[in-house]
Length: 544
Image 1 (cartoon, helix red, strand yellow):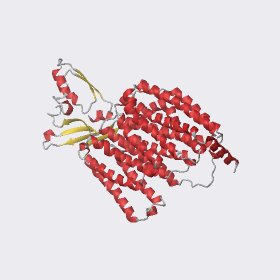
Image 2 (cartoon, helix red, strand yellow):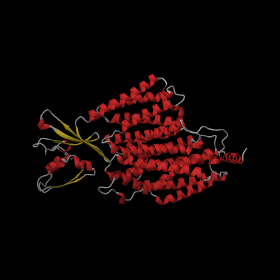
Image 3 (cartoon, rainbow, N blue to C red):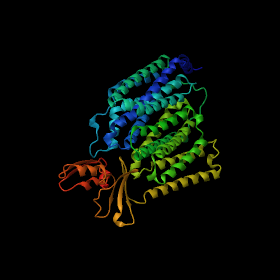
Image 4 (tube, rainbow, N blue to C red):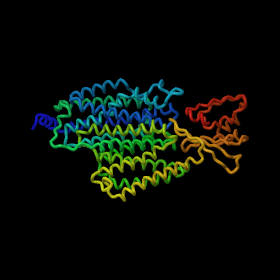
């Protein structure tokens, strides 16, 4: 037995991972809990600053997943280039420094100014407010899992990954039901800060425990009793591709639900909780993922989704909150199940998580930054479905044990191609149907604004309508005599109509309106009146 192998066996024997091993689980669980608790907390804090836009949450998710990537890269670099003693010192020192950035409460000076880029503003705000503590929290799970795998090579570190996701899930479910209703924003921030202090203490104890066990060398101390097969290039591509698709589908589903209903934390948390649940299942109980079963569920849910999308204007709340999240969960199970299926040996642990995090970031970048530039409406949902099918086809083609390996069973490949073509055709028909009355369509940070023209058979009563998602923002008759007639929410029988009719002062009114819509409020203004409208969306102003 070599000197390095003896050193490793000494570490393994001393650690024994009994009671001392519990500190790994506690630290990882607490870190994950804090990591995901701060996400809806700080996002909800800044939501009113940006007009309640659904994109606030997806932009925050881009930041969180990017910091997760940097955290994993930091953990990978640390474990590959420094001894355990140095890793403990560096990580503990940075955790102490990060306490300076607390509490995670943005200053009012970060409120957006007119004409500023909201995406850049949110990303900068989050970086300055919680950047370092969040990045270190992100790094701790893979870092401690690596320590665990070195200290106890016979135990699976992937169970700690599932435990990490369980802590994340608890935080997400706890925020809308326990934290937000009972604690002020200030109290939330200070309690989270105390949690970071406790986490730093636990992390220090974990490091010192390992340090005292004698693990003073780098990862190279891990013995290689037998040659293991390195992950292939295509496997590494899939480590990135499947998490990217899952991330696209998560954010696309969240965007759709929030635009069709209303942006608030529970509707942020529900899709993310299902996303994390798929992680827990696939890494803690991998046998629960059956490719055949979930492919069948995918086809059924996809058919149901296409059926619902054929007339979005008639969508009720129940299918929006059930069918779309169900399809997202199934896609997440497929993506994470396939990713877990090709997980590497523990030595490649930090590299594996780094690839997964990279996929999450690429998916977020596609939804938050690229999609608004190339699409003038929300098409990420359809894109995610097609990418899921494509990457599954890659697995079928490259997996040696798969019956379809290297193009075998051409009839089955023909069926798969038919599914892709049918899906694309169905999406095209739905898309063209949704635009048949459209005369203008614009998308920006605040969502998609659609202007449609509707005929009634009598040209005098033809009108134009503005909508944001499924929400109607006003109509206007095209006929010159009827153009100034108040419609939709502002008729004579509306709250505004009664207010003006019974208001004691009849002349020189001063009115303030929050939200422009199509500008219907102006129909109530007479000569000498003053109207000021507050509108945050520049596309609404240009189209009104």
